[in-house]
Length: 114
Length: 111
Image 1 (cartoon, rainbow over the protein chains, first blue to last red):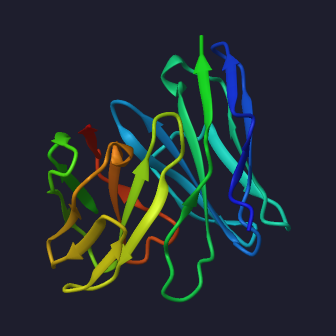
Image 2: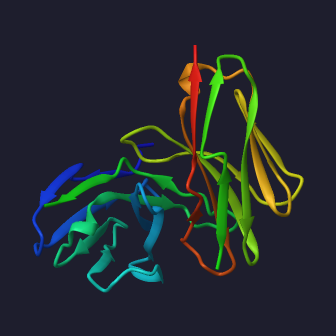
Protein backbone atom coordinates (compact mmCIF):
# COMPACT_ATOMS: atom_id res chain seq x y z
CA UNK A 1 0.00 0.00 0.00
CA UNK A 2 1.26 3.46 -0.82
CA UNK A 3 1.89 5.68 2.18
CA UNK A 4 0.68 9.18 2.92
CA UNK A 5 1.88 11.69 0.36
CA UNK A 6 2.23 15.44 0.80
CA UNK A 7 2.87 18.15 -1.74
CA UNK A 8 4.82 20.28 -2.08
CA UNK A 9 7.72 19.07 0.03
CA UNK A 10 9.29 22.52 0.37
CA UNK A 11 7.81 25.99 0.14
CA UNK A 12 9.19 29.49 0.60
CA UNK A 13 6.75 32.36 1.05
CA UNK A 14 6.87 35.94 2.29
CA UNK A 15 4.89 37.50 5.11
CA UNK A 16 1.31 38.31 4.23
CA UNK A 17 1.01 35.70 1.50
CA UNK A 18 -1.19 32.65 1.72
CA UNK A 19 -0.33 29.01 1.12
CA UNK A 20 -2.15 25.75 0.37
CA UNK A 21 -0.71 22.37 1.29
CA UNK A 22 -2.02 19.05 0.01
CA UNK A 23 -2.24 15.59 1.54
CA UNK A 24 -3.28 12.24 0.04
CA UNK A 25 -4.04 9.62 2.70
CA UNK A 26 -3.42 5.90 2.60
CA UNK A 27 -6.02 4.20 0.45
CA UNK A 28 -9.09 3.34 2.52
CA UNK A 29 -8.30 5.79 5.32
CA UNK A 30 -11.07 8.32 5.86
CA UNK A 31 -9.52 10.40 8.63
CA UNK A 32 -6.87 13.02 7.98
CA UNK A 33 -5.20 15.01 10.76
CA UNK A 34 -2.81 17.94 10.41
CA UNK A 35 0.03 18.90 12.74
CA UNK A 36 2.56 21.70 12.97
CA UNK A 37 6.06 20.75 14.13
CA UNK A 38 8.57 23.35 15.35
CA UNK A 39 11.76 22.96 17.42
CA UNK A 40 10.28 24.95 20.30
CA UNK A 41 6.72 23.61 20.47
CA UNK A 42 7.13 20.12 19.07
CA UNK A 43 4.18 18.50 17.32
CA UNK A 44 0.93 20.38 17.77
CA UNK A 45 -2.48 19.32 16.51
CA UNK A 46 -4.17 21.64 14.01
CA UNK A 47 -7.38 19.84 12.99
CA UNK A 48 -8.89 16.58 11.84
CA UNK A 49 -11.23 15.81 8.99
CA UNK A 50 -13.38 12.71 8.65
CA UNK A 51 -15.81 12.13 5.81
CA UNK A 52 -15.34 15.71 4.57
CA UNK A 53 -16.24 17.23 7.96
CA UNK A 54 -13.95 18.89 10.46
CA UNK A 55 -14.42 16.83 13.63
CA UNK A 56 -11.77 18.33 15.88
CA UNK A 57 -9.71 21.51 16.04
CA UNK A 58 -6.60 22.55 17.95
CA UNK A 59 -5.71 25.93 19.41
CA UNK A 60 -4.62 27.75 16.29
CA UNK A 61 -5.92 31.07 14.90
CA UNK A 62 -8.55 31.17 12.19
CA UNK A 63 -5.84 31.87 9.60
CA UNK A 64 -5.35 28.11 9.58
CA UNK A 65 -8.09 26.26 7.77
CA UNK A 66 -8.59 23.06 5.89
CA UNK A 67 -10.95 20.91 3.93
CA UNK A 68 -11.38 17.33 2.83
CA UNK A 69 -12.66 16.05 -0.47
CA UNK A 70 -14.89 13.08 -1.22
CA UNK A 71 -11.83 10.95 -2.08
CA UNK A 72 -10.43 11.72 1.42
CA UNK A 73 -7.65 13.93 0.07
CA UNK A 74 -7.18 16.98 2.23
CA UNK A 75 -5.83 20.50 1.88
CA UNK A 76 -4.65 22.93 4.49
CA UNK A 77 -4.60 26.67 3.95
CA UNK A 78 -2.75 29.35 5.88
CA UNK A 79 -3.66 32.95 5.10
CA UNK A 80 -1.70 36.13 5.92
CA UNK A 81 1.48 34.26 6.70
CA UNK A 82 3.60 35.31 9.67
CA UNK A 83 7.26 34.56 10.36
CA UNK A 84 6.20 32.25 13.19
CA UNK A 85 4.35 30.02 10.75
CA UNK A 86 7.67 28.63 9.52
CA UNK A 87 7.49 24.95 10.41
CA UNK A 88 7.18 21.39 9.19
CA UNK A 89 3.53 20.68 8.45
CA UNK A 90 2.62 17.04 8.80
CA UNK A 91 -0.43 15.21 7.61
CA UNK A 92 -1.48 11.87 9.08
CA UNK A 93 -4.15 9.42 8.03
CA UNK A 94 -6.00 6.88 10.10
CA UNK A 95 -8.47 4.13 9.34
CA UNK A 96 -10.49 5.48 12.30
CA UNK A 97 -12.19 2.14 12.72
CA UNK A 98 -13.30 0.92 16.12
CA UNK A 99 -10.34 0.46 18.44
CA UNK A 100 -7.77 1.76 15.97
CA UNK A 101 -6.57 5.30 16.54
CA UNK A 102 -3.04 4.99 15.24
CA UNK A 103 -2.05 7.59 12.68
CA UNK A 104 0.37 7.22 9.80
CA UNK A 105 2.34 10.29 8.83
CA UNK A 106 3.48 11.69 5.54
CA UNK A 107 6.94 13.18 4.93
CA UNK A 108 5.73 16.71 5.65
CA UNK A 109 5.88 20.07 3.91
CA UNK A 110 8.67 22.36 5.08
CA UNK A 111 7.31 25.93 4.99
CA UNK A 112 9.69 28.85 5.33
CA UNK A 113 8.21 32.34 5.72
CA UNK A 114 10.57 35.25 4.95
CA UNK B 1 -6.01 18.68 29.06
CA UNK B 2 -3.89 15.73 27.99
CA UNK B 3 -0.18 15.99 28.81
CA UNK B 4 2.84 13.92 27.82
CA UNK B 5 6.36 14.27 29.24
CA UNK B 6 9.31 12.34 27.88
CA UNK B 7 12.68 11.76 29.52
CA UNK B 8 15.53 12.02 29.04
CA UNK B 9 15.62 14.76 26.38
CA UNK B 10 18.72 13.17 24.87
CA UNK B 11 20.44 9.83 25.36
CA UNK B 12 23.83 8.72 24.10
CA UNK B 13 24.58 5.00 24.07
CA UNK B 14 27.37 2.79 22.90
CA UNK B 15 26.41 0.10 20.42
CA UNK B 16 25.12 -2.87 22.41
CA UNK B 17 24.37 -0.81 25.55
CA UNK B 18 20.71 -1.41 26.45
CA UNK B 19 18.57 1.35 27.98
CA UNK B 20 15.02 2.67 28.38
CA UNK B 21 13.13 5.81 27.41
CA UNK B 22 10.32 7.09 29.61
CA UNK B 23 6.95 8.61 28.72
CA UNK B 24 4.75 9.95 31.53
CA UNK B 25 1.20 10.93 30.68
CA UNK B 26 -2.01 12.36 32.08
CA UNK B 27 -5.14 11.82 30.04
CA UNK B 28 -8.85 11.59 30.60
CA UNK B 29 -9.89 8.21 29.30
CA UNK B 30 -6.89 6.72 27.52
CA UNK B 31 -7.83 5.37 24.11
CA UNK B 32 -4.26 4.55 23.16
CA UNK B 33 -0.58 5.36 23.72
CA UNK B 34 1.61 5.48 20.63
CA UNK B 35 5.34 5.34 19.98
CA UNK B 36 6.87 6.82 16.86
CA UNK B 37 10.37 7.12 15.49
CA UNK B 38 11.38 10.24 13.56
CA UNK B 39 14.51 10.65 11.47
CA UNK B 40 15.76 14.16 10.60
CA UNK B 41 13.72 15.80 7.85
CA UNK B 42 11.13 13.00 7.77
CA UNK B 43 7.68 12.37 9.16
CA UNK B 44 7.19 10.21 12.26
CA UNK B 45 7.18 6.47 11.61
CA UNK B 46 4.63 4.43 13.57
CA UNK B 47 6.10 1.81 15.92
CA UNK B 48 3.55 0.65 18.51
CA UNK B 49 0.10 1.17 19.98
CA UNK B 50 -0.60 0.23 23.61
CA UNK B 51 -4.17 0.25 24.90
CA UNK B 52 -4.18 -0.88 28.52
CA UNK B 53 -1.93 -1.16 31.56
CA UNK B 54 0.19 -4.30 31.50
CA UNK B 55 0.27 -4.51 27.73
CA UNK B 56 3.62 -5.06 25.99
CA UNK B 57 4.62 -4.93 22.32
CA UNK B 58 7.92 -5.92 20.69
CA UNK B 59 9.58 -5.22 17.38
CA UNK B 60 13.16 -6.24 16.70
CA UNK B 61 15.30 -4.54 19.40
CA UNK B 62 12.41 -2.44 20.75
CA UNK B 63 9.91 -3.32 23.45
CA UNK B 64 7.17 -0.98 24.68
CA UNK B 65 5.36 -1.38 27.99
CA UNK B 66 2.47 0.51 29.60
CA UNK B 67 1.35 1.28 33.14
CA UNK B 68 -1.49 3.55 34.28
CA UNK B 69 0.82 6.57 34.40
CA UNK B 70 3.75 5.89 32.10
CA UNK B 71 5.19 3.92 29.24
CA UNK B 72 8.70 2.69 28.64
CA UNK B 73 10.47 2.00 25.38
CA UNK B 74 13.22 -0.51 26.05
CA UNK B 75 16.04 -0.72 23.52
CA UNK B 76 18.07 -3.93 23.69
CA UNK B 77 21.59 -4.05 22.22
CA UNK B 78 21.04 -0.94 20.07
CA UNK B 79 22.79 -0.36 16.77
CA UNK B 80 23.82 2.96 15.18
CA UNK B 81 20.82 2.73 12.84
CA UNK B 82 18.54 3.00 15.89
CA UNK B 83 19.67 6.63 16.25
CA UNK B 84 16.58 8.86 15.87
CA UNK B 85 14.11 10.91 17.86
CA UNK B 86 11.53 8.75 19.62
CA UNK B 87 8.14 10.33 20.17
CA UNK B 88 5.38 9.27 22.53
CA UNK B 89 1.76 10.35 22.03
CA UNK B 90 -1.65 9.73 23.60
CA UNK B 91 -5.20 9.73 22.33
CA UNK B 92 -7.75 10.43 25.02
CA UNK B 93 -11.40 10.89 25.78
CA UNK B 94 -13.62 11.89 22.93
CA UNK B 95 -10.96 13.98 21.21
CA UNK B 96 -10.91 11.87 18.08
CA UNK B 97 -8.26 12.43 15.47
CA UNK B 98 -6.00 14.27 17.91
CA UNK B 99 -2.76 12.90 19.29
CA UNK B 100 -0.97 14.80 22.06
CA UNK B 101 2.78 14.40 21.71
CA UNK B 102 5.70 14.64 24.08
CA UNK B 103 8.81 16.60 23.14
CA UNK B 104 10.68 13.43 22.20
CA UNK B 105 13.94 11.75 23.21
CA UNK B 106 16.90 12.14 20.85
CA UNK B 107 18.75 8.83 20.84
CA UNK B 108 22.31 8.60 19.52
CA UNK B 109 24.02 5.21 19.32
CA UNK B 110 27.77 5.29 18.77
CA UNK B 111 29.54 2.38 17.05
